[in-house]
Image 1 (cartoon, helix red, strand yellow):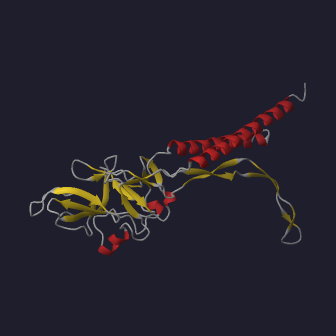
Image 2 (cartoon, rainbow, N blue to C red):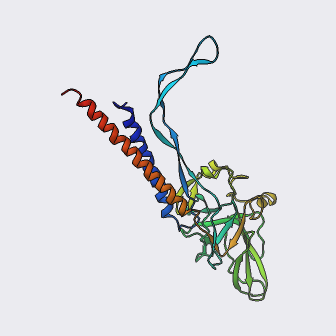
Image 3 (cartoon, rainbow, N blue to C red):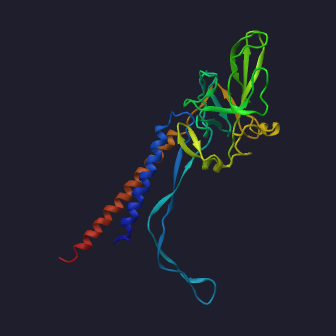
Length: 297
C-alpha cells in the first residue's frame, strides 16, 4: 500500500493502457495479414479499500452508506473479434476463403492439429494439399476410382491416369469443398472433400502464430473434432461446407484481415490520452508527497 493511494492507482493505469497500446499496435501491424482477427483489451476495476461497510439498523435495509476507495484498474481480458473479413480475389485455384463461421483443420508432421482461417494452400511435390507451413489440410479422401465418403485424412490429388489412359489436366475445389479432377478425355472425378470445423465458443481458441489456433477442444467444436480415421456418412455431412452454418468455400479468394484502421486510430488516441492522464495523476501524487515530506523544515 503506497503512502498515497492515487499514486498506485495511476501506476495501474499506466501499466494497463500501455498493454492497450500494445494490442492496438499489433492490430495495425497485421492490417494486411491474411485472415487476421483483431483484438481489443477489456478493463475492470481493481479491488476497493473499505473504509466503512454498510450497516443495517433495526431492519434489513442499511441506513449507513458504504465507503470504499478503489485501487486502480486491471485487465479483464483480451477479446478477439472473429467477425468475417472481406474476401479478396487472387485467381489462384488453391487459395480458399471461407464465407461463414467455419475453420479449416490442418495437421503438422508430428500429428498435431490446428484450426485456421488462412486458406493460402498449394499442392506440394507429393500431391498433398498443404498450407504455407507445409501442414496437411484435412478432409474426406478418395481417388479417381473411389469417391470420398467417410475416410478421413490429408487431402491429396490423384496423379495416376484413368483406366482409359486419360491424364490429369486440372483441379478445382467447389463451394462445398469437393476436390474435382478434370482429365484429358473430358471426364472428371471427385477425389476429396475439404471439411470445415465450426466452434461454439471460438473466443477460447489460442493464437499459435502463422494464422493457426490451438486449444481446439476448449472452444466447443460442433459435433467434436473431425480428426479421426473415419466418419459415418451422416456425421460427415455435418462438416460439409454449406451445411449447419459452417460457411461455404470460395476458391480463388483469401480472407483479409478484419482490422478496421479508422477504429484502431481512434482507439489509439483514446489509449494515449488515458495513459497521459494517468501519468499526470502520478506526477501530481509525487508533488503531494513532496509537500508532505517537506512539511517540517
